[in-house]
Image (cartoon, rainbow, N blue to C red; front, side, top):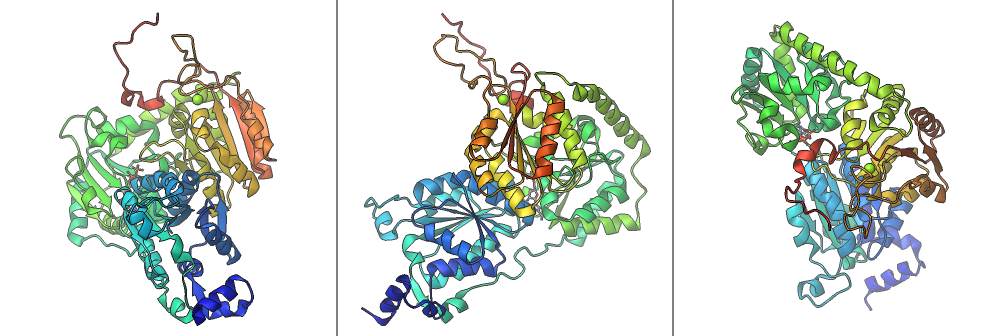
Length: 585
Ligand code: ADP
Ligand code: MG
C-alpha cells in the first residue's frame, strides 16, 4: 500500500480529519469548483454514484434540494438559470436518472436557459467495451446532440477546468444547457490538496458584453425612423437579459407600442399605455417595421409570415439577438443587430435620444382603441361568480390575486389553463411569469415552482391544468419537505382539454379523461400541506389569499366545468384530426 493510499483509508475511516486539509478528492473538488464560481444551489436526485456528492455539498454550505424525479430537478435548474443568469445545476445518477434529466436539459437548451446537468456515470473501461456495467450507458455521446456543449472529466485535477468550461458554455453567447459527465471513479480519486486548489478555475466575466457594430445600429435606427406603424416585440431573451431599465426606456422614450411574448410579460406592466398585448393580432398584422428584442420568429410568432403578419412584403424586421445565426432563420431580417440586449438597446436608445420624432399618432390610436375594445369585451366573462367555474371566471379571480400581489411568481402550464391565463392574468414585474416556453412542454410546473421559491424567496402561484400537474405532481412532497411558499391551483375539469370524452366501444375510459371529481387537494394534505377544494371564484380567491398570507404549501382543487375547455387550447390547429373517423359498432 502506498503512503497516499494509507491516507485515503485513514480519511474514509474518519481517523485523521485534519489530513483533509492536505489531501482532497473528486467529491470535494467538484463542490469547491462550483462554490468558487458562485453556485449556491444544486437541484438533486440522490443515488449511485452521486449520493455522497449531494450530502457533502450540503455539509459544505451549498443548498441541495432533493427531488423525487430528475426531470423536475432538471426543470428547476433550468428556470433557476433563467431567473439568475447563473447556470442552474442539476445532479443525477447514471443512465436512467441521466435520461430523465436530459429532457429538462434539452428543454433548457431550446429555451436558451443556462443549465448544467451533472450526471454520475459508470466505468469508462466497461462502458466502452460494452461489457454490461451497472447502469451502463455512453451518456456523453447521447447528451451531445441535445445540448449546447458536453464534457467528461476523467482526472480529479481536471475538475476545475471541466466545471469552468461548463459554466462558460452555459452562460456565454446564447445561453443553453451543458452536460458534464463525471464517472464514479473520479469522485474518490485523491490528490494533493494544494494541487487541487491550484487546479480550480474561477471563470472571469462568464457572459461578456457583446457590443453591436455602430454601422448595424445606424442601419436599425434608419429603418425604425421610416416606420409609420412601428412595433416592438419583447421576448424572453429580453427578460433574461435583466436590462429592464433600458428596455423600459426604449419603449417609453420612443413611444412605440410593444407586444410581450409570454415570459416577457411584466418587463413593463401589462397595464402600460404602450402595451399592445390586448391588441396583439392588429399590432402584428398592421405594423410595418417590427423590432424584435430577444424573441425568435419561430412557431410562436407564426414564423414571421402568413396571415398573422398581414400582406406579404408589408413588413420589415429589425432583430436584436446575441446569436448571429438567428438572423434570417425564417424571413429576411432587414436590420440585424447582433449583440447582448443591454448593449443593443442602450445603443438604440442613444440614437433615439439624439433624433426621434415619436411614433405616429394615428397608429397609436389604432392600437389603443383596439386594446380597449378587447379588454371591454373580456371584462364581463371574468367577473362571473358561477359554479362550477369556467376557465374565465376562475382566472378572473387569479388575475386579481396577481394585481394585489405583483411580486408573486406565476408558474403556468396546461392547454386551456395556459392559453387563457396568459391572456387574462396581467403581470406587473419582470421575470414573474414562468411557463411552458418554446416547446410548449408539459411537466415544468413543480420544478419551476420549487426553484422560483428557492431562488427568489417570493410567493409562488402555480396555475396548473389537471393533466399538466400530473407530470410533476409527486413533487408536492418536495414542496412540503422544504416548506416552500408555493400555492398550486389545479384547474380540474376531469381531463385533457375537456373531461367529457368516452370510449366508443364502451370498454374503457376515453383516452383524454381522468377519474371524475378527483380531489387533488388530498395529495397535499398527505404530506402535511394545506388542501382546499373550491367551486366558485370567490372561494378560489379566498383560498389563494390565505395560502399567500400564510406562506404554507397549499394545493387548491378548483372545480372547472368539464365541458368548458377546447381541444388543445389555442393551438388546436397543430393537433391533426382524422376526417375518416369510423362510427363505432
Ligand atoms: P420568446 O419565445 O419569448 O419569443 P425566444 O426564446 O424565442 O423568446 O427568444 C429568445 C432569444 O433571446 C433567443 O434567440 C436568444 O438567443 C436571445 N437571447 C437570450 N439572451 C440574450 C441576451 N442576453 N442578449 C441578446 N439576446 C439574447
Ligand atoms: Mg384539464
